[in-house]
Length: 136
Image 1 (cartoon, rainbow, N blue to C red):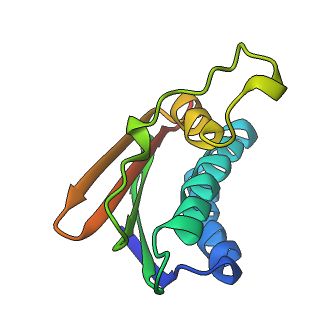
Image 2 (tube, rainbow, N blue to C red):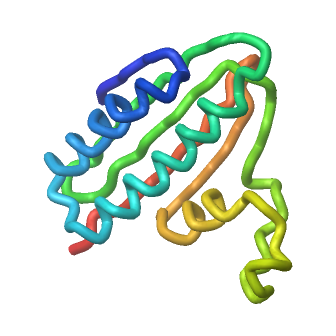
């Protein structure tokens, strides 16, 4: 298990993604699954950076829990206001683009490409857990 904590600022996004992707590389994920991990992590991290701390600054803590030859669990924690993005209504992807509401597509995609996506509130923490299995 390894951990990284950085201020929730856009200039730290590359470092956060590199931290996650270095572990995905070490575990031997294929190109497609690495893309899914990157897309999902980036979506969650950007949402936290943009919305978790509207009146002040705060941190993001990323904990990686690799299960060799099985999966990678990515736990992303923030101390912003309580918000469960998994409760949002799924976007109506069958509608033409001009009729769709803005937002929500990133979390929708995350739920589609990751093997497990969970949210929980623990005290003053939002905790998102993303899990991707290593393809045989």
